[in-house]
Length: 335
Image (cartoon, rainbow, N blue to C red; front, side, top):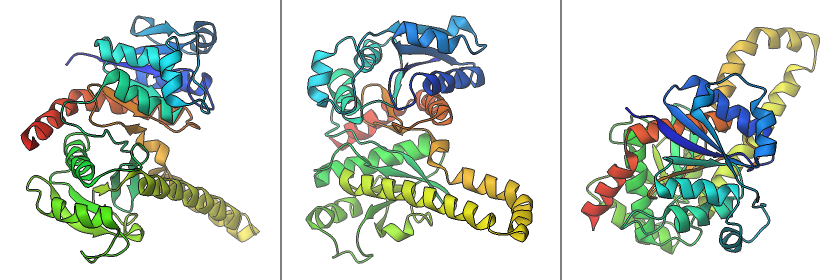
């Protein structure tokens, strides 16, 4: 298998370039089949690289003078800042020089750039963002979490199909269960979009549709592919993050209330640490933008090295499993 060529936006996110470069190099040192491109200001990237030992033959800096800030209008930024790390990085994917692009930068710019520069697979109506979220018995794919807030029923059907391909090919889940987020389990419940989408999914022969899924059942792992439009998906994702952070603080606070609890904390620390790590979103990498001609992965703006590393490693699996080819095949058959 040929190496996977990954462009990392070294200027994107709250912790750039330090944590971004660190995570990228950790991935490089862990996976021998990665070629790394670091897009951004050379004078800022080089001092960070100097901190680490790595195979220099597998790392290339792609100098980009401009940075797209989070608050900038995405479409205008992509059009005007041609010398930005996001635009130059995605151009490498479009040209076939790289297989994947990873960024913790402006979500809007990454979404616009993915569609305008990398381009959609023919037949894909709307590329969704699809992060893995932890559940009681593993993980599930939340699709869409932020790309299409005004999706149509036909979009959600494609999300279900692309999500099924991803979970089966990348995560190894055979015949993944697909559910649509709703306010009740009954088929007649929901808003107009869900009511219109439900029968389309029910009559779709190439997915394993299990029906409606209520938000409270998602953490229990009732399905493998959670289908929703981006407004709902983003609320679910953000609530997940918020509740997880509060729970961690409450547990830590409770364990420090007395001498007895502190002694108990020492005893349970290894098991607790392992459990909490499994419920940390950063352990699952970023959110791939499915349905594009190349792989684009969006990580959190607050990403630390571990999430960047896992996002880069995620690209290797995606590339090896030829997910784009499988999505093309699925969408072509549909049309």
